[in-house]
Length: 151
Image (cartoon, helix red, strand yellow):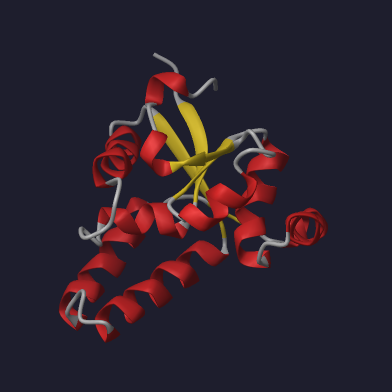
């Protein structure tokens, strides 16, 4: 069995801890495949900032307690998902952000996936709806199936 590799964004990964989201089963399949070492995940360096910020917002909105959020932060850190430096992705990120009218944050995931020729799974429905039809490597987390990943 080969190990496949994808990019995942914070909105997709947060479903592992925020259990009131849609497409939980598919998101869980991603982390299960990662933990089973049949899937490698990569993210840009902003991933940790986005995870931490989203968990803070979840606490503010009473979706999690502070203690639960702290446990989630430790859980994410223990995963040791490789983070790729942004400096080599700045130009491509900027170009994608301008071309598709997306944030630099969203575009950094797209740039990482494009530069490594990988599929990118997002849990952000608006992002997927905006670019999924024109960028075939951008996938909705709810459609995740390990068997469908080509590499």
